[in-house]
Image (cartoon, rainbow, N blue to C red; front, top):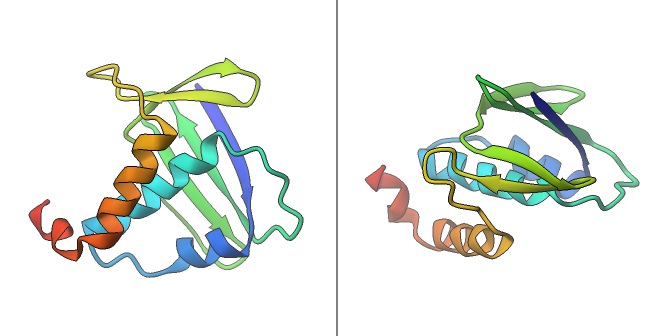
Length: 118
């Protein structure tokens, strides 16, 4: 079992609290959350936190003073160094790199019809 907790600032908190109206919105939030996993930057004005719980039933929890919600976390994590994790798909062992995450975020943000094909 792995538990990763990251404090979040105002920018990510606003993003996290935007209504999720489609699968595309869920994918974007998940991808942006993946970027947080290896981000150890100190947050001075904490607005909430993200907790990633990886076990047999993995979930990602989003928490602010007013709201808590969660959904399934579809990846595995291996700690390579203190506070640095390898993110990968369990079935294919495909590593999810920061470059891949950034590319996927760009694709999902720029193609509104993409969400309709899920």
